[in-house]
Image (cartoon, rainbow, N blue to C red; front, side, top):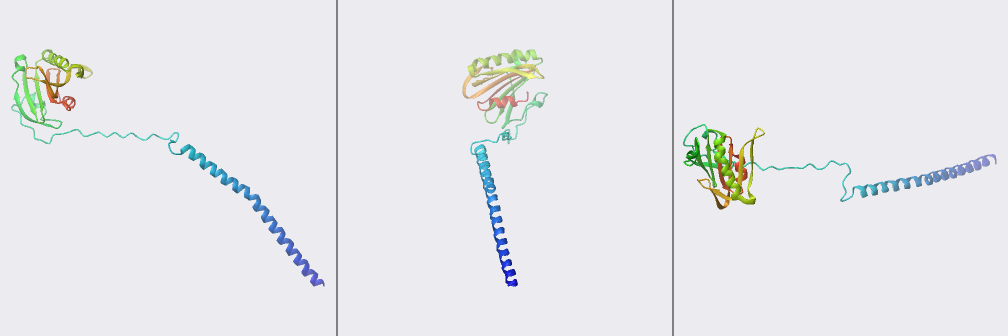
Length: 227
């Protein structure tokens, strides 16, 4: 009997222990469940808020702007071989053999400007329909006496489309320039209406230049001329 009672007591103790442990474990799980659910809801709410702030069509506040990329086309250059000049002088030494995409194909002494006091003058022809007349005078005043009327004639012939201004050298005006579209300048310096071409005329110090070229290129060509 004593042994049986001991065994029965042991069984009872075992049953009590099992029940207590099971109950405690279940209670712990039930207590943790609200915290798990709350955490998941918090994560979902945070994700929804991020999508609303950063969704399609919205920019990140404070983000660096995308850099601006500027593509510059290379300057056109001639592949032709420039013709030789008929004389080597201080002026011809600085005259270009190529002008952007155009190569010199011929050069002759100008016969008009020497009659107007030029020390030296040349009429140059470049391929692609570009012609340049350039002369040099002894003083800026003499060059201005020839160059200013040319500039004024182009401004008058070009109408509203004419462009003109000062030729700046070392922050000071060293001459005047003008460009007119649809106009060619003849050997006498007279603007003649001509479709598809434009003319630029300028004086710079002691030099006077007249350039006739296709309209699409005239601004770039006269800006590239070294005098």
